[in-house]
Amino acid sequence: MKKYTFVALLALCAAGLVSFTPVAAQEGLHKIHHFFMRGNVLEKNGAEVYLCIGSKDNARVGQVLEIIRVESTPPIKGNTPNFKRIKIGTVKLTQIVDEHFAKATIQSGNVQVGQIAELKVDVD
Image (cartoon, rainbow, N blue to C red; front, side):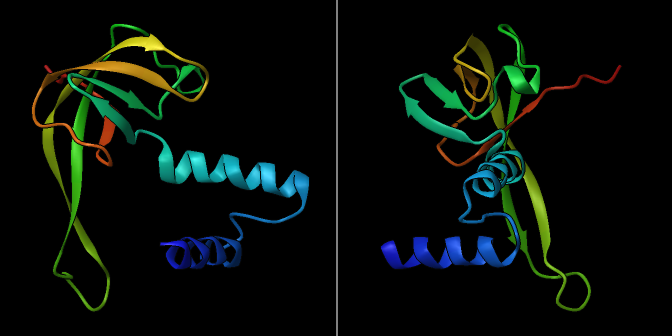
């Protein structure tokens, strides 16, 4: 596992998302949070989950978020990866922990760690 973590960190460094200087490292962590973590279901305990969505993302108690899982499918053209989004269920925010995290209650579906939460938008 440590080998994979090192390889992932090395890849992020090469991509310019992480640096080892203090200021650049902080900026890199912000980029990682914004692009790779935002919306992730981080922890599940019964019907409660913690999400990587907080006040900085304009999250508010009472909002209903849709939970999705992303799966890769065979490429459509050439080597370009193709992905599909699968709706899993919904959660309702019950507490904004801080600017990065929130607590929610599962309303429907088999929500699991690693899935993604997004604001549910109803179109009339």
